Length: 81
Image (cartoon, rainbow, N blue to C red):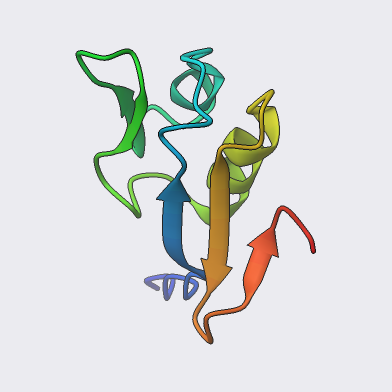
């Protein structure tokens, strides 16, 4: 029996490139979703490369909160307001 994939709650990932300090913790946690570009700034390469839990953990690992996550209704889910 095939398992039905769970629908993603994360609909949008935004990286604040001005805030990003190049710590690369997001890449270490969610390497299929993020990579570091030639300016040593985080970039979303594949928005659903990792599961929601991993993407949330990667956003939480950012020391300067440069990653913002939104749900399917456009509500900010991380960092919490």
